[in-house]
Amino acid sequence: MINQTQLNQLSKKYKINESIVAREFVQITFLKELYEEGFSRDIYFKGGTAIRLLYGGQRFSEDLDFTVQVDEGVFIKLINKFFSKIENQYPFTFKERKTITGKTYLLTANVQSLKNPVFVKLDFSMRENVLEPTKSIIESEYPVIVQSFVNSLSKNEILAEKIRAILRREKHRDIYDLWILLELGAKFDLDLIQNKLKYYDEVFKVDRLISRLKDFSKDEFIKDLRPFVPIGEREKLGSLFEYVKTYLEKLLSSIDRKSS
Image (cartoon, rainbow, N blue to C red; front, side):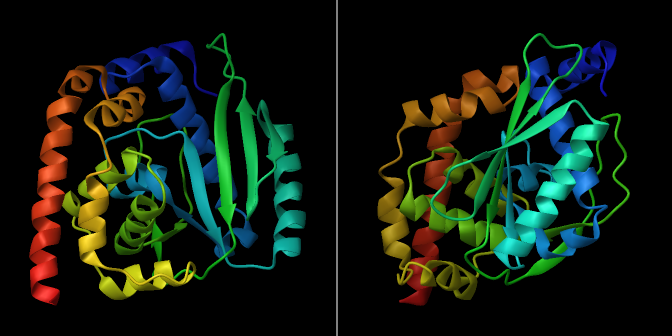
C-alpha cells in the first residue's frame, strides 16, 4: 500500500488533498487486479476516471464506471469471487448498493496513513453494447504497476455517453468532461451519439444540446468541480465555466449549421 511519504510527495506534485491521492491509488490498484483476471475481457472501463487515467484528463474522479458484455448472472458469480480474492490481499471491503439497473458496489479501503477510509463507487452497466472497444494502458507515478491492457471505450464513445449524460441529468462535471475530451482529440460522431440515445428512444438534435447547456450554472459548476481539481486551479473555475460554455456553444452551432 501507499505510505505517508509517498502520499505527501504526490499530494504536493498534483497540488491536491492527500485523501484524493489515496483514492486514486486505490482506483489504480483495483483496475490492476481486475484486468489481470480473464473475465475482465468482457468489462470495459469508461467515464470520468477513464478520461483521466487512460486519456490524459486533468480532473480527479471518485467513481469507476464500466460497461459489462456478459450475462448478469455469470458476472455476479465472477465479480463476487474476485472481490473475495481482493479482500484477502488488500485492506479492501466490497458492499453491494441497491440500484435500478446494472450492479453497483462500494469499495471501502483502509489506507494506513489516513485517519478515515477511502470510498470508491463501482458502477457496472449491462444495458447496452460497446460500440468502439479499445485496449489502453495506465501509466502513473503511484507505487503500483499495471501490466495488463485495460479494455475500455474509445474517446469518441465516452464523448457520446457524456453528451447523453448532459441531455439526461444535470451533473456539471459532464460539460467539463465534454470539453476536455474535445481538447484531447475526441470527435463528435453523430452515429455513435444517436446509438447511445436509442436506449431511451430519443433522436439526437444538436440544437437541443445547445439549449441544454443554458441549464448549467457557474455556481454549481464551481461546486461540483472544486474537490476534483488542483488547489491552485479552484479560483479559476468561474472563468473556466464561461470559457467552456462559450467554446461548446460555438462548436455545436458550427456543427448544427453543417448538418442543417
